[in-house]
Image (cartoon, rainbow, N blue to C red; front, side, top):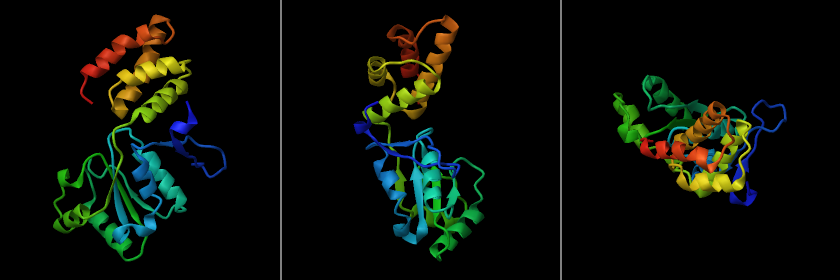
Length: 209
């Protein structure tokens, strides 16, 4: 894909100096990516990263932690149930007192969380929020390209452009298109084509994402 369409954060996750998968930065996630690099300016040393499923929250959080040399208290999926509320409250207190910054990730805004601890609820509701939005055109195209490439599928730019215009603007749907196309191509013994993608795209657009 054309590199001018996006930026990349490239970091070795294993510390060995080898290139890792890059996090693609476009207007859909640029504010969140930038905000995670300014932890020294987070009020009370904490921030919340919110975005839909499979939008790259974990990857971006890992990059932020690596850039701080591991000194980042990461709480992922805090809205998915089973949250240690007392533990998170103490972590926020430590961050406010100069300890490791706290980064939380979630799919939903804190007003929708089931928090029973009043002090924690007020603290969380006051946190600054970095949001990853629905994928824009550049991000859709690049995610499709990578999704097909990771499966060893030879898909040209014209087909990527065709699919980009028709796939639902949802990260899970984009991932599902590559996975379903791969399966259909194997089952039917065919190459990826507009004709093969047509029923898959129709089904994706009929589903709720």
